[in-house]
Image 1 (cartoon, rainbow, N blue to C red):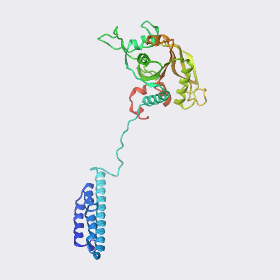
Image 2: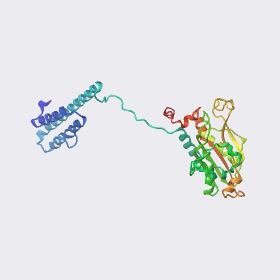
Image 3: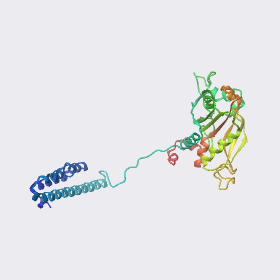
Image 4: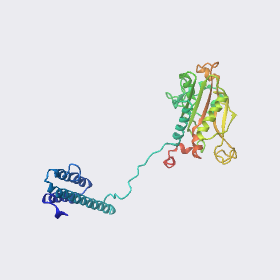
Length: 354
């Protein structure tokens, strides 16, 4: 092929081959390609000059430029293959990188299952017109207990094994009583102080209690508090809200039932159970519902008038209902997790499944 080239073209090819043979990296081969093949390179200049030649010379000039282009491209391809073969041989002998092997995959993180379920519930309640609120995890006694109708001598405090915080060296300060909140219900009080009825809010968050840790109890877990205050609210509105919520969570109608329950900040108070959505035959019983056919879901009830009054809300005009969802329990139900300690354990082998 070279013998058909004119002396000028033959010299261009020799120069290109010399650079190609001396190249030891792909970047050097790319530089030769830019100088000879790409727009603005030698071959492009030769083709552009054809129009300035006498008609009888144009054919040979065009053929020569194309022969030069083909020869340079072939030389580039051969050298590239040689360099790749050399890299593979070096890698196999333990002295380099093997480009034929798959690249190292990037390890991606994932959302914690509690975060996944929390965001899903927030979306559901937002679509129902609820605002998403938050509150401090280190609370004061007046919000965690007093303003929720749980005074210092109230027997209900025995239900809360509380983490009290030291203030000025004292475990319980007589003025503040700092503690790690035992429930998200304390945000009820903060909400009623700040907002004027009517309003609908939910408050997801982390809570703390001095529990004996086992497969179903943790000292740190997650709840979601719901509060609605307005005119003419009844237990029927509470049940309708819970049924709508459950239908969105499980994507089917869920039967619910109310059982009497005592909570100082609601009157009347209930325990709301849902027909187990995991039973193969509805109501037949399974491992999740412990063969009862029902799953204990959340405490709820109508907000106690004393709680409304302590927050300055007119109980002659307004009523309200509240509910508390156990987020940790819902996460365990959703993903069939049998030990609550997995949720806060930080074991990447467990978390990588989500």
